[in-house]
Length: 305
Length: 305
Image 1: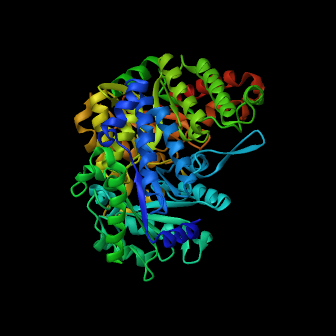
Image 2: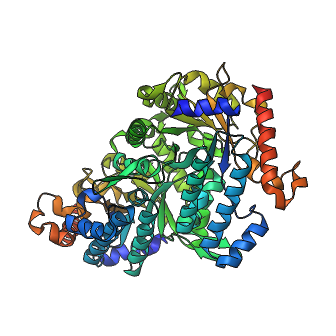
Image 3: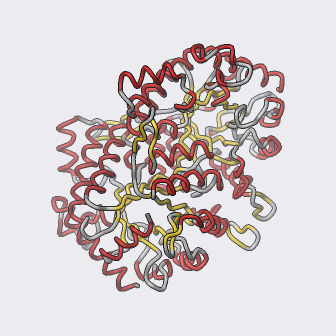
């Protein structure tokens, strides 16, 4: 799967993922108003607003980017209607030719991780019939439970030609609290990074494997070190834009060919119309603002690489 | 919230949680057959079978136990119909007076963790109206992202009188891979345990706080050490039964009054009819087998404490 994503990154000349993390706080009021008029102040209304918002953004940017990353928490908070909107978002993005990275950060004991892997990447057998479930292309995975919590995802990737990104060094301010702790001469996140290389051994396609890593744009030096330490691990880089990461800091996440990483921006793109420099679009043209923000990000990364 | 759970444990004289982790492999064939006859080989059929199975188990055991712990992965694997069955399971258990521990193991950067906390324990505002979502009583939380991934759960607990259990030392075989690594003189899981005590400081009700810990029954010595190290932290103990934990090993998880922990059994109870000693019930009387297994677990723990 990873070689297909890389090929699409080359085609679009954009190592960019747009994070579809809709929040009612920045969905334009005309969309919310219409949804509440139709369904009242309900979870269905919220989910309807989210889906309309996502579709408008995707329509405006799908030709520029290889992939999207819906953050399932933003849908789960609206319960069943929200998760229906999540599934419809995944399907809509796939119909537009986009790769979908399910940002689910799941991870549990072996038998339970297997169910999560099936839910997001695999197929479940009911009677004699294997059925796809949420069916994204990639999922993010939490490593705290060790190999037997990650292995079922690796197996499902192998059987279904899918990929995962395992949390190594996350973008948030307190990520160092445990991840940066020294274990002998290495940090915890380096130990996890070494395991990620190992878990991906049987799933390499060219330089990179279907088992990638998440390393935050907010920690560029660590990103550069991890790029060297995990030569077969493709890196998903969240934290660009709203969380503080900038293109010029990200060169180290990429290999000498300019491959090896894909950078995510969520609010910086989907809420661009609320940000400095894009006010002229106004609420009504929020999707055009998102397109402009993707193009700006593309140039920022191109200049940096 | 924790003081209510403790009071219910005293009333039922059973520090026992039944894990509602249904798997098509052990749901009786007459239930699956009826569901497939009604809905074909679909996700809806699987979800229908799960819900019928759960209700029969709950009807057979609710008077004996204070709490249940549905593992959401087992529902997520059946997509939207599965998650509807999850929500109906939560609601059904609450209607029977049971506390519901949502085993979701969520955890993300701050703003995203807030959405997960709202989804499982809080209320989401749509327009001016706050709406409950999955609305369990407790949820399990993954600590890999540090304080700012856990804090939003703590805040939602405070605002809504709910509780969490943070993964400290998990029950699976590879849990030591990262959790047991030495950081200075402590292990990672001890460092996490210390943080759990700290996160719960503002939420103490009597001896214990609403911020609990998950420590596996399969590591009884570590459980006994953590009991001393985290004096205000109530412990959720998975891994009894099918994973290998036994009552006599669990004394150390409890305090001198016999409080401080609640032990989970999932397959050992809900799939009891497939286990040695309960074959006489047969598939048809699977729920009676589950009741017998709860009673056996109750006596096993009573003898041990």
